[in-house]
Amino acid sequence: MIIRLVIQQQFFLRLSKHNPQFIVDIYTMLKALCLHIAFIIFTAGYLLAQQPAFKGGQQAFNDFLKTKIIYPEYSRQNCISGTINVSFMVDKDGVVHDAKIQDGPGIDLDDEALRVIKLTSGQWMVPAGYNLKTNIVQPIRFDPDPTRCGPASIRDMQSAIASYKAQQELENAVTNYYSNKYKGKADTTKEAIIINLKKQLGYDDDFINDVLSQAGEKFKQGDKEGACHDWNFIRNIGSDKADNFIKKYCAH
Image 1 (tube, one colour):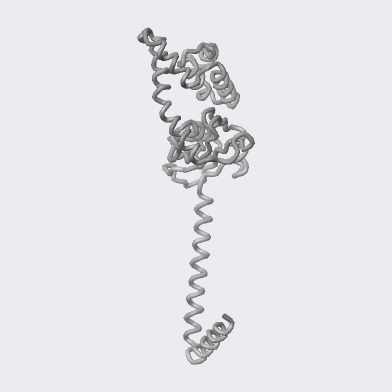
Image 2 (cartoon, rainbow, N blue to C red):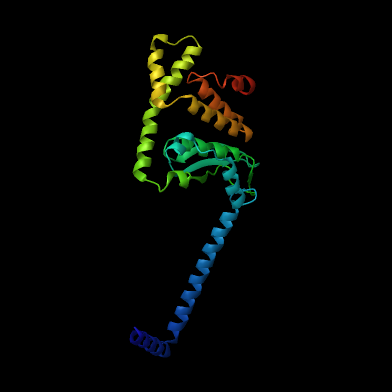
């Protein structure tokens, strides 16, 4: 290696001695390359500065997520982790609108990621001249309790995600039945089947209490919409435990 470098150096010196223009060309090329790199770095920094930023910076955003995220019950119980990409826009006042999931597993983690992004509404600083029609994509990371879940198993998570999606049809059957029952339109001869479905889905008192607790946390955060969604879900699986909350906070 040393011998080769010496030979290359000698070759370069001989070439430069007999061809001074070679040195000028190399210098010009390197100068242009450095200017090009500097321009790229400057442009990237300029574009980054022109994007909406969460008030207080990245650390404030991370702290916000820590205090607001309520790990969804199904994913918590099944130790499901993942990163959900949420797409949204902001207006000139930093108010969030048109929020939707761009990439996610299609389970309750998606719903929670979308909920917390909506909670950031009004917390974004929007620079002058920013194109308000631009989509912002924000990743939201979920990691279950490592002391309870241990090392993540991709196979177990994939199985749990598939089970969640399969259960959605059963859940819809239950919620549709009780929704129709409250309207006097349900076929009550099928209620025994619905009760068995509820047992299969694990919709017992412990589950309902967990959802009540989750709704209470959302309400404390000022997320009445999220809390009412949970309370109405409890009602639509045939329980009256959330009826007082619905009557007090969710009646239209």
